[in-house]
Length: 204
Length: 250
Image (cartoon, rainbow over all chains, first blue to last red; front, side, top):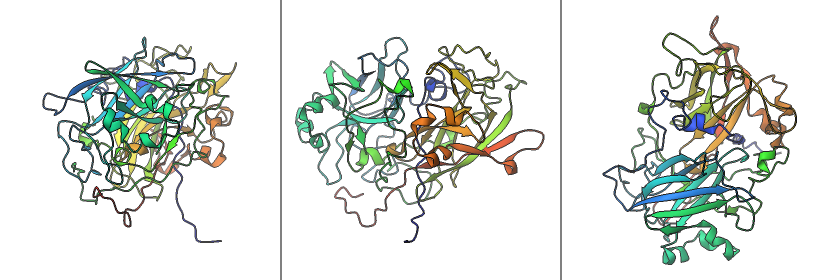
């Protein structure tokens, strides 16, 4: 026997269930008057620096059917590649951009829209720059533990080609599962939970 | 550097890796909704980058007076939600056992009859006009939190022909890094439905299930008013950065 490390175990995850909106976007599901607005519903204001973009995201199950009861959160750097976080030691992020958003998928169409800005590049652990990206966290009924992945941008071909995380994907035909397609000012991104086009999800 | 609202040294270490044997697997066929919604390919593993170890800060000023009082936060003036009055309290800790301050906790639940205020819930039990079912708070300096609510009822759900959810409260936990993001459920000590539930059953380790069961805490009850349950939550801990050399300076 050796000394005990005496560490605690992380609380086990449980599904967010079909009624996640009640807790996280109550105004969206008709529970008004408790909070003034749904947290994370607005990401930019008139002063936010950077190129305005829209992310149009769907989450598809193993039959290709869009989830209509999912909830997505995103976390991203500002236009200069700085995170609005105490753990950001490289400088002050844009005070008009928190970098975090939360949206439910539409109950009829399954589409989830974020109005945000295009993030700048953030360094990897060894100092190389990662390509611009947005971190996604997806929860829903039937998802036992929140799914993490990233959204990269189709018009950043050169940066994507040198991104250290994308470079780690062994099966290269899966890299496009992380790249959102630019259509005007909108980036379209389908997350596939299963199947041939299954999105690369992260354990990080 | 964002304002953290305290003079603690910023935490910049990567998080301990997740023990995915401890969490429920993605594919748990007894919980039928997981069958078509579970990734089947291997996850891509890598040590946290800045994108995972950073996260937003939520300040106490965003909270309304009744945000942590589900008995009153949806009720008409002078009225209260119906049900067994309870206090739920505890601490948010990291895997090193340290209290985590500034954690945004959001909770939601069914009413005392087991009915959610949601258009997709058609259970026979009636809605309570004075109960919305959501609340939130932010942990204090020691990681402590508390809220007041009514004990939610158990309810049947369409999975097996006769499956019932144990009484539970959903918790969304937002720590300091986006990689700590967690949603879980709190169950109540002594509920015989816990061990029959296909969602709980996705957790294979008995001790892990027990980590989600709140204990009746008579010391925290308010006599002639409310029973109390203690529920501690553990988030991923951070590695020390003492011997890590990072070119980007963190």
